[in-house]
Image (tube, rainbow, N blue to C red; front, side, top):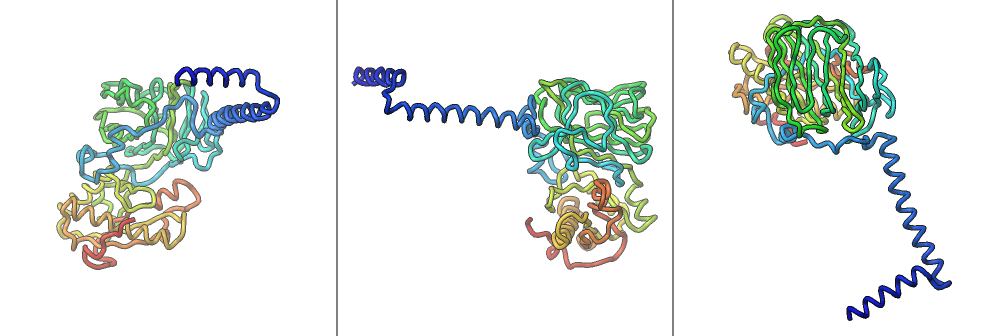
Length: 398
C-alpha cells in the first residue's frame, strides 16, 4: 500500500511538471488563485500600514494586568482603595484626535520636531511617534497652582519628559521605559520602577499638582510623591519623547484640568459644586474604580457635616439623542447615590438624585473641552427633587 501511494505521488509530481494539454487550463487557474491570495495578503498588509489600523512596529496592545482587572473592580476595591488622584474640576484641554485625519499631525497640538502622525488603533485615534520627537499642548491660560494632567500612552524605547514651563528647562515629569517613572526638578527626585514587560501596552498616566506638592500615577499606582517640586508654569506643556521606529510611542485621550476648591468650601460658597472625578464607562452608568477618591471625599464631607443633605445631579453633553442622554444622566446620578450608600455607608435619606441630560450646559458643546465640562456630576446643597426611596431609584442594568 505504501509503495502504491509513493508511485501515485511521483506520478502526480510528473503530471504537474508536464501536464497534458487538456489539464493545462486547470493548472493555470490554480496558479492564478495562489497568486491572487498572495497579492491579497500583501495588499492588506500595505493598507494596514498606510491607514494606521495596525501601526507598523507597534505590538498588539493588551492592557496591563492592573488596568485589565479594573473592569471587574468597583470603587474602593483592590489597589483602588488607596488611590488618591482627583482630577481638576475645569477642563482646560481635552483631545482624543477624533477630529483629525489619519496620517496628519493633530491640528490642535504644536509641532516642534520629530516624526508624528495620527493613526487608528483598537478603535481609537492615537498620536504615533516613531523618532525622538517634541510637541506642545497649548492651553487657554497659564496653568494654575492646582492642576491635573491625564493621558494614555504606550511605553516607548526611551523616556517621556513633560515640562510644565513649556520649554526644556527647570522641573519636569519623567515617565521612563523599563526603568523609572517619577518627578525630577531642581532638587530631590523620587523614582519608581516601571516593569519592562509593560512595553508596548496601554498605560494610564496622571499628574496631580497642588503648588509645589506633586504626585504621579501610572494605572492604579502612585509612583512618585514630591513635596517640594519647583517648576514655573506657562500656558503650554512641552513633551519630549524618545521613541524609535521599532518601538514607537502612542499617545491618546489627553485631559488637562484646573483644580478647584475643596468640595465643602465650594458648596458653602455657591450651594453647588461640579466634579469631573467620577468616571463612567462610555455610554453606561457603571462607575469606574478610579472614582474612589472623589466618592471618598463626598462621603467624608457628609460625615464631617451631619446636617448636610445633597441632591446628586447627572448631566451630559448634547451628542446623541436627547431621550437617551436624559435616561443616562438619571442612571448615572442614581449610580453615584447607590455607591455612596452601599460602599461608603452614607445614609440613604441624605441623598436624592435628578438627571438633566443635556439641558443645563455650563460650556458650549462646540468644543471638546466644552463637551467634557458638560459631562459632569453636580452636588447641590439641601433639598431638591426627591425621586423616591433608595431602592426605587436604583439604576437599571445598562
